[in-house]
Each structure stands twice: as C-alpha cells, then as structure tokens.
Image 1 (spheres, protein in one colour):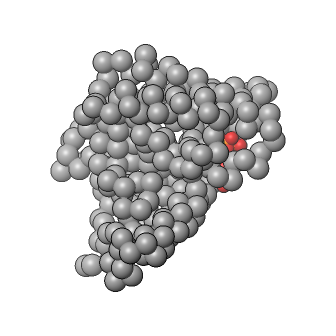
Image 2 (image 1 turned 90 degrees about the vertical axis):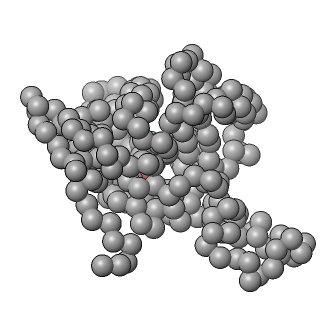
Image 3 (image 1 turned 30 degrees about the vertical axis):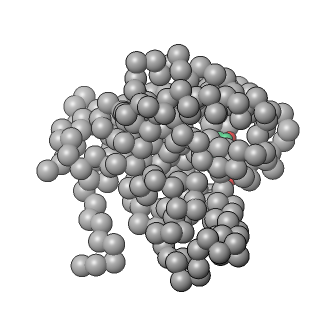
Length: 248
Ligand code: IPE
Ligand code: IPE
Ligand code: MG
C-alpha cells in the first residue's frame, strides 16, 4: 500500500514499501535560479550541489539503493568557457569534500560518463573517492559526468565490434543483456523513476538505453529549490502508477 499524507503542506511517505530502487535526476535549472536572484549562474550551481547533498541523504534514509545525478552532459562543453570552468571547479570541490561530507553515511560513489576528457586532477579525485567508498553498502550515488546517452551507446557498439573482431564474442552473442554489460551502467539496475525539474520536458541525452521503461516525473521547480518534500511527492506519484512493460 502507498499513499501520501499532507501534513502542514508537507508530503509524508507513510508507507515505505514500493520505494524505487533507482532514481535518476536531471539537476536542471541552476542558472535560472541564480538569474532570478540577480546572482551569477555559478551561485546557482553551488546551491544545486547543496541540493544534491540533501537529496542523497534523504534517498539513503528512505531506502533508495541508487541515485544517479546528471551533473555534466557531453553537450555542456558548448557553454562559455567561464561557465564550464566554474562547473568543473565545483565538481572538483564536491569530490574533494565527498569523504568528509559522507563520513559515517555508508554511501558508495560511482561515476558514469567519458572521464577521459576531464582534467587529471578531477580524474584522480574520482579514482580516490570511488575506491574509498567502494565497500559501502548503503545508497550508491552515481554521478553522471561528461555523460551522454548516445556517446555511451556508440562506445559500447565500438567495443562490441572490437571484441567480435578479436574473436572474444560472436555476433550471435549480442543481445540486450550483453549490450547492457558494455554500458557505463554495467551492474546498475535501470532507473525506476527519472525526475526532471526546471520545466523542461525532455531527456537531454540522459540514460537513453536505461530509461526505456522508467517512469518520468517533471516539475517546474528549479533544482536548487528541490526539497525533500518534492522528492516525496515524486515518489508518491511513482507509487500510484501502473507499470505494464507492454503487458496488460
Ligand atoms: C543545470 O543547470 C546544471 C548543468 C547543466 C550542469 P543549468 O545551468 O542548465 O540551469 P538553467 O537550465 O540554465 O537554468
Ligand atoms: C541537462 O541540462 C544536463 C544536466 C543537468 C547536467 P541542460 O540544461 O544541459 O539541458 P538542455 O540544454 O536544456 O536540454
Ligand atoms: Mg539547463
């Protein structure tokens, strides 16, 4: 059973069953949040990072197993250099502080995306934080960094082609299960719920393969304003949906 009780305008998840195993969020609207306040866009990204920390803690507390956060897309390189630099320096700061912030929280950090194009310093931090948290058994926070769904699928196809050419697999072996194992998300279940705030109703190259049967939840809230309450609303709506997977 599930339902949402409104208590002083707050959504309270009354029943903890049917919690999505994997929630994916497009952390969008940081720039507009800042512009509305007359602040530099960078201030919005910083506030967005704080929102992520809150949502990570809440997801872990309610038993979500995976939270994938879209932090930087393969298309975000098209932004002005000073914005890309600001995003990269925030990312570095987030990774550097991750152990301290997550101390005692049992959270594992994973990164998906093409990390080759990131600076050596960021790559070193990724390796460090992923390895330091690898034994943690609570929520897995999957950070999508220089991530693009098409890039992921194309690179999987290229590696499959190489393995066929080298005789490691044959074309008949290539099915959905095998293909999934060539994606960045190998071993991670598909997202049950994809949340996109900021009023944009699109996927923006996020988890194209993995979201084929995900439930979508859109809202006009800008990511820095996204609260625990909004998370509960999204989960409650998810719990009311009937997932049919093409059946009856
Ligand atoms: C999302 O916020 C952060 C990244 C894309 C890295 P935006 O920067 O896209 O914010 P808006 O959409 O311009 O408001
Ligand atoms: C999606 O947001 C990417 C991230 C949140 C990292 P964008 O702001 O880049 O998406 P578009 O350009 O509006 O589609
Ligand atoms: Mg945006």
